[in-house]
Length: 127
Image (tube, rainbow, N blue to C red):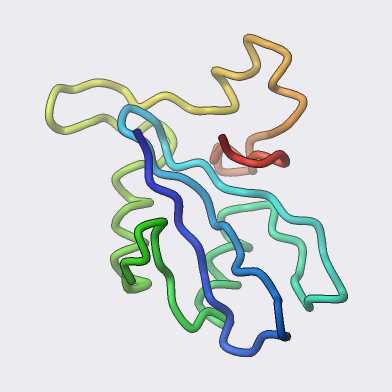
């Protein structure tokens, strides 16, 4: 089971959707949603953790989860710290899996990639 995270932009157009940051799942590293630049919504290319964090810090009115619970930027950074590439689950020493690496064992790898720091990104919708 996992939790999806989103941002509400400070300035947004009518009917502009919130951006899906990514998903945090038990036993997995955090996995990000990749975005191409979108001039209509004023969204830049978001294809690395670094780009995401800068974008969230400068443009986000709030970060919230799929249960509509708000979390602070610092709380989000703590989630990423605990679920970074190579992270180990403290409860039992399990090495959290990386979505893209696991998907590369199947044909799903075509829908994602690793950023320069090893974070998993998907170009398709999360299921």
